[in-house]
Amino acid sequence: MTKEEQFRAILNRYIAGKATEQEIAFLESSYQSWGDLDRSAYSPEFLDQTKALLWAGLSARLQLEEIKPAPVIQMRARQSLGTRIAIAAAIASIIFSVTLFYYKQKTSTNQPVKIAYQNDIAPGKNGATLTLSSGKKIYLSDFQDGTIASESGVSITKDSIGQLIYTINRNTSSGKGVNTLETSKGEQSQVRLPDGSTVYLNAASSLSYPANFTEHPYRKVKLSGEAYFEVAKDKAHPFIVQTKGQQVQVLGTHFNINAYPDETAIKTTLLEGSVSVTLLSASGNRKGITAGEPVTSKSKIILKPGQQSILAQTEQLNISQVDAQAEVAWKNGEFVFERENIKSIMRKISRWYNVEIIYEGDVEKKALWGSISRYSNVKNVLEMLSVTGAVAFEIRDQTIIVKPAIK
Image (tube, rainbow, N blue to C red; front, side):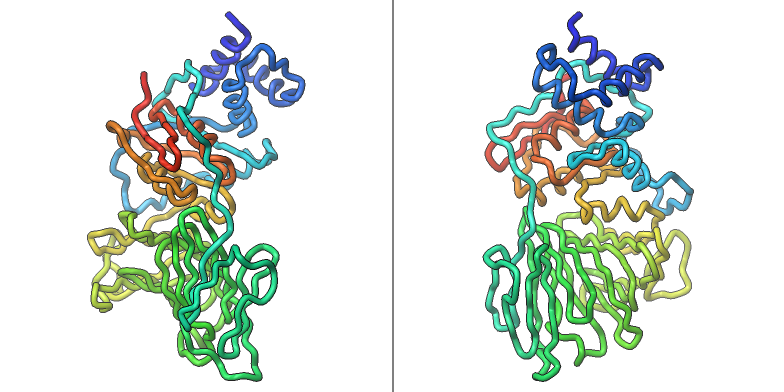
């Protein structure tokens, strides 16, 4: 048996939870002395795969399980996924990190993980299109730091990290127009609104907002896609986020809304403070809601930190207890999957890498947990998903083909 075959056998037993203390010590030693490893005894593909697994931290595990219906209300205590990710990051202080967790169903990875690809694809980057109330479009990637527009007493600048900043000129008339910030696939952006609130915009999303809030009783914005909000406190002017089917109202807090048109539900996750979520009909009127048990109000519910409202296609609003940090991991540069099927995962990859996804065969029977850096090329991300043994991939230009793994 060659050194690579021996190393692979130990890795397989470790992933399956069957490694001995001596084998775990060997892996820990390999992690500590990776730079001194004799690479002539191993294939490049094996080294790439093994490096990612070891650097993810030896407390990590891989999990696969059959998808089963999950209860809507999940109030039980559990270890924070964000905490587990932080531990792995501390063990492996690197840019590219992968966290894989071990579950009930063991899988075999006796064969090297290989992605059939004609080309690799780089991750998304900061960028967006700003449409002013006049209709003028500004492509942010065309501008360096500094002022990019002035309109009706409002100055719009771009700072060194690409954030848009709105500043009101008190000596001129206030602008009343609506601006729209829109990201394409493969882009993300952030904006500091005139009231001081900061919004992080995920890929394939748009945010419409007044260029100046001072002449409005509410600070109202409209969202399509996903955004993380850090709302400045202003009790006299509630902050309202409207999406298709619902509106969220706050006085000042941090929360995330996922309202992509191609997702099966709109999810609002609260990190701190409190928010009220109101269900709207197609015509904008309030509708009845449910939250596991009947709630007192017929028009809205109040979320507490760590809770998530879920507005499904049934037009019912439900509440679930979640790991809030995992829900906003995208803002911090990670994909985090908590019991997600491969199609849900690939929708995220499609938006961030600006790729088309094609499915061949049945790939919906498994649920995956784990985290992967958003700043690695797509080939590395797909390799980590392939470790599960559930799926295989091909990359052809800007298309990723997903199919069942060959057993």
